[in-house]
Length: 64
Image (cartoon, rainbow, N blue to C red):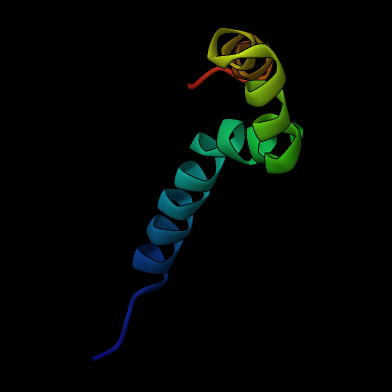
């Protein structure tokens, strides 16, 4: 079966929109401290302190 140019273009638009909608997740992934640093934060300062550290990144890159 042949796929029309219009179908291909529509799929490209759909995929680009999905990719763009996940930009916050890609930004967060690189901005969060390393997992070892996060665990160290929890061990030395507790969960509430760790939550505050993580919140900085979440606030900087909010979900759509």
